[in-house]
Length: 130
Image (cartoon, rainbow, N blue to C red; front, side, top):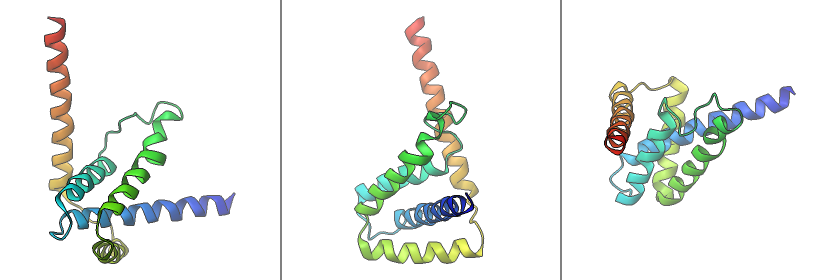
């Protein structure tokens, strides 16, 4: 059981490195615009405090953490030029070794986007039922 937990911790650590590498690649001008947009969406979703499927729903709640985020990371890395991805991955490992980076502006932007989406849904439902 200990080996199983150690493998999961290593996989989670690798995913954390990859997500931060994608964040760094998103900011790199050598990455094509479609890849940058997709990378921003993947990083935003991965770092968002809200999930597509809430975690309190049994089994399905962790679907995004186990399937959607790794799939998004994989696709984003396929879209990013290999040399840029390698540079960003190395920089990501270095930064994460020093401690988790904190970006309050990004957190505020993610929360603002979720609040805006919630407001738009409520507005739509209000107009639908009135």
